[in-house]
Structure formats: C-alpha cells, structure tokens
Length: 104
Image (cartoon, rainbow, N blue to C red; front, side, top):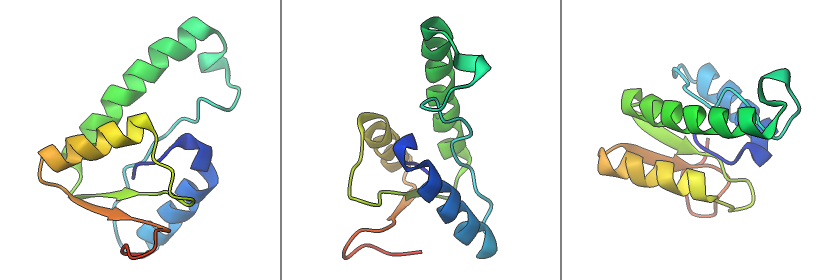
C-alpha cells in the first residue's frame, strides 16, 4: 500500500479490508508526523525518512500489486515516486476512494 501518512487511519482501514480479503499487505510502518523517540530530532527524522523511502521501494519489489490510498484524491511527491516505480516494474496499481477507480 502507498499513501501519504496524513492518511494513516485510512491506511490502517484499507489494511484491514485487504487482509480480510486474504491478501498479504506490505504497508508503511512508521508515521513520522507523530512524535516518537526514534525520530525525535531533525537529524534522526531525515535519516529515517531516507531509510523508509528505500524500504518502501523494496516492498514494492515484493508486491504483486500496489494499492494507493487517497481519500480526497491527494497524491504527494513520495507516493508519485512509488507509483512511477511500480509502473516501471509492470505492477498492477489500484486506487481507493477515487471516482471511477476500482474500490476496495
């Protein structure tokens, strides 16, 4: 799954639906917008953001398809990069909460 972490709750909800549908879900695991000791300083947050970005691309490598969660149609730069990467690998891409797109 890909999305802006501003949609953390929607990501969690989509994870439930995808899991209940019998799919193995690879999703973001950290919300850097929420306080946590692992990214308490700007230097820690910058380092972890790079690590997580690379990790998410590796998750896309493992995925059969990518589900983009976008409740209000917003797709940020990181998610755009992930979609482009998935497309370059020939991955199927689905979108949630978008008129005319495949829904959960």
